[in-house]
Length: 187
Image 1 (tube, rainbow, N blue to C red):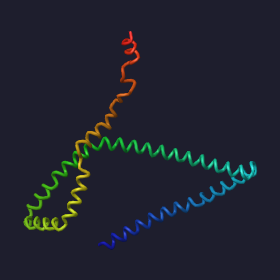
Image 2 (image 1 turned 135 degrees about the vertical axis):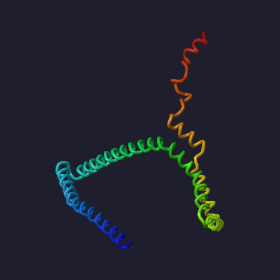
Image 3 (image 1 turned 90 degrees about the vertical axis):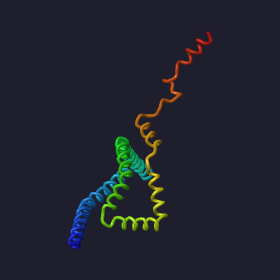
Image 4 (image 1 turned 120 degrees about the horizontal axis):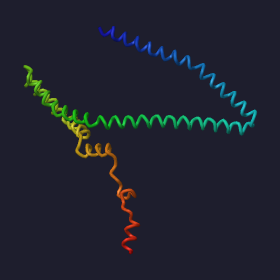
């Protein structure tokens, strides 16, 4: 039974690798052609401007291409981060509430299912023995769970981030016209 499953997995992996090797083999001639085109451009620039100036011009051109590519990639990554952040903020509140409810109901559901079986009490004792033998690991897992436990501060911060920052006390738009007040006091 497992032999057929393993053979299917092997054939799927082999076909995937073969497909990507075929694509790579198509790309290799284009990469070589690009290299020869760059060499031809280098010879043309060197013939026209001289060896030193031509090499500087090629270096500047490739630097410009690299900067443009960097800006393009950064812009795309920034758009993705903004979209991910907005989706996470919209989804965080509902997921956190559901996770807390599930975490609170899970132990009771497991205990109820365990006790409803014919060997429930014996299985519960065996589980308790296993937990006591591995008490340091259980404590470590409990501490890790507490790190991810939602707090009141975290929910307040999340709602503040969605609402935006509070107005700045030094913001000129929120301050009264002090020049006018000072002139009235002086008069």
